[in-house]
Length: 436
Image 1 (tube, one colour):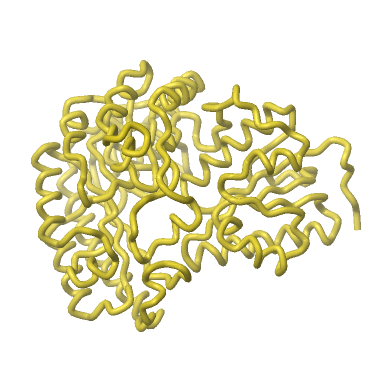
Image 2 (cartoon, rainbow, N blue to C red):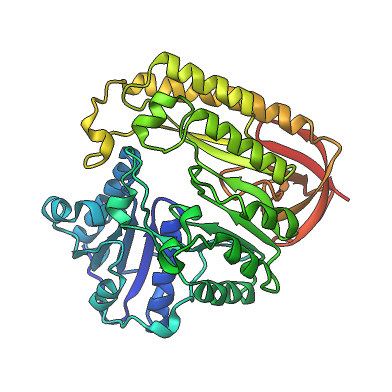
């Protein structure tokens, strides 16, 4: 057994969960570096003696991954491979008291809003002059911009308000500073994220300000793409659609999780919207922004979801033909509104319904992609993988959407640059093309 020296601490930050967690880690790392602490993100170096695990506590699968990761580093601490283990993020916020009892090897647990306290454990100060500064963990040409924290919605399946609190918007001025900092570091694509985009500004300015925010960020020199993630369908601020349509650097793309299409299920989810209203909104999106790519997420296996409800969801997806779609089986989360319902659908049925829905989406995606053959698109290239350069169109977000593959033996592009690509072939989730 070997014991690390406390003399020259080196911190390794491990991030689990969503892009919002990733931004939190990037902010934390900027604060640590601002205090002259050596910090890396998910490093494999064996000389990093302090581990900070930024956890996710959203659904069962994410909680299990977080706990397993904590236990892995608890074992490393017990074996003398690391000196200190700290845990932060959503799981820690939600289950701090239980975790302190169950995993005593952890030196301290912190909630989602306790960065100053975490820094203090490392003899570091929270530096207000570093607000807006981040250490990017993504590719240098794109970054996430978190415009708010928390959520005021009452969706019965969702535990986010339990872990992140109520909605708190960040001032436009602060977001502009952060965006300018990101552009100076080489970022070309800004992905705007929040638990709920469309509520932006109501708390701070007493009115929705997403339109004004988009206009202001679009005017920042060097921002070539802006992408919108996680909009809520109820009372959607349609005034933003004019901005999306008219600004060349705002992608014709919207991530709008709809969750379901059956009115009884939507009512029990407390989504505040019906199938008819949802269809009207989708029609408005497509009319006001021709060619817009709509990404959505569906939740299957919600308590009481009948086979008839699920078939209605399948029909809805077939009719609407979403460009991108993700599926999650329902997770029965304590302290949520749906926890009072009986979780009466087996895991096997939940998985089977998720698979059936994705089969439908794969067919739709294949058919849509086939229509793109022969067209030319502006593509931002993220990486070289094997024999291909891999990039994305404005209709695709990193890691979750389609990719464009270009044969590296025939064409050369620079990572982080744009190029025009003519599509020559397509599969369900990939486009194959040549640089023109």
